[in-house]
Length: 358
Image 1 (tube, helix red, strand yellow):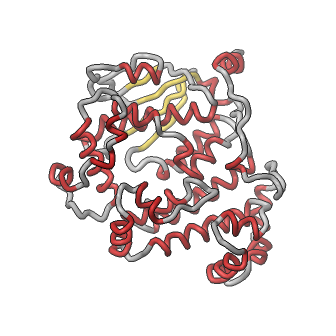
Image 2: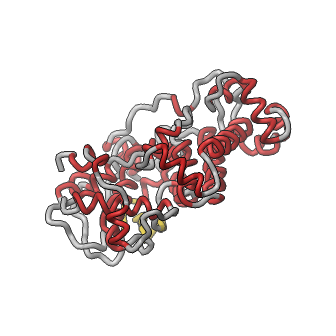
Image 3: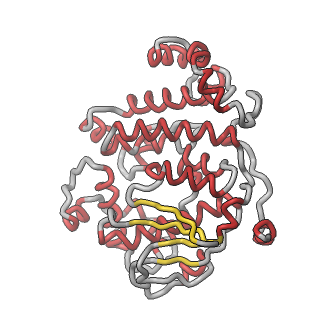
């Protein structure tokens, strides 16, 4: 591939060309349609390159998914992580549906791509299924060996990228799109398991889903980008870049949808502050710093506007919610936030095999 498709992504035209091909309106307010149009343009320029979706999925790491990614990587086992993934899949994938089953000694993760436009289907399916495989590698620090990988689309002219990632030759023109692996891997303890972190991140995921579903179009995608790095809420330029548009275009589209970047930042800060006050031992000063406030007084003033009282009062009233999380281990308030902590030593393929052995 030579990396050209990714290095030159800023030179790919906007959605107008693709919109005319797909029948969508160029100024469609639905951001999913906008992303589909951008992808169509990308494929129009580079789509003949075999394994383009695999290359994209190989770069699709958990760190790109903020709270949902942290909830996955801090899960106790892969089985627990699978539960998180299936409940919060809307935060990771714009199209498609995942289902998980255990058949005998095989775990099977199937992807339904019927909601994906036909001309994007092969690329998106490869990207998503490769991305899932990459997630497993992020959680274990080594790749989970696949028993089989199946795609419904025709085999490309060259499957070198597929074989390099999955370490086997995938089956093409299959009846289903599926990743299969040994069930024994489901119950191996994950090296970065952290019960406190998972409880906190799951709460953020629930609140984020509520926020995203309350908005449609571009506004529905902005909150997810804001919490990808829980230690820093990005500015409008960074969010606009992540959405492949200029800050001015982002402002215009949010205005058309009846909101603004400032309003969405306010909602995300409220959501994150309530989760941190409820599920962590962070002080008001630490929460304020985490949310990017220059002074705790500014955060306290904003919180009074959101909830009608100070953060300490909200925390006292949320004691019932905190009791449910008291059973899991939780670091002290002096410990660095979990998203800045270092991981444990990577697990090798040999260690994984020994753990799976009866």
